[in-house]
Length: 126
Image 1 (cartoon, rainbow, N blue to C red):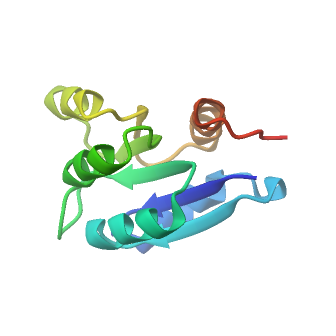
Image 2: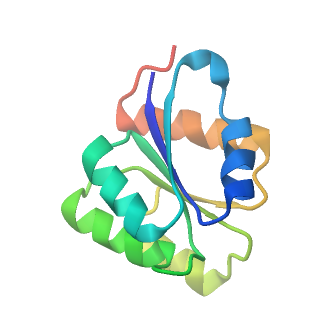
Image 3: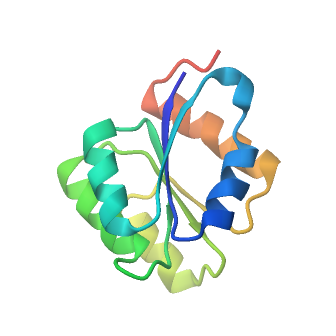
């Protein structure tokens, strides 16, 4: 069982992502609707894996990622975005994103990335 945090300003996007995460594995899911809320929830929950949107109104996901990596250098963060330009991808990688996934989420892609992320995070997934 893993602790998974989803940070996205879109309720629909969060619901869509949650539907891709296997329900039969007992993962603890938490959600935040903005970057500040995501940082606060991350600090209290210390999730094994965080799914982080880039485009949010208060703080973009890259700023959130940068702040997370300062305090939690081993945080496993999967970036989600509908528009991933090469420059954005490079910055996310430089900031230490585990991977970058294009929106809308595809079940098989999300599950594959989650399995790899959980292995890196040292979570036994079965």
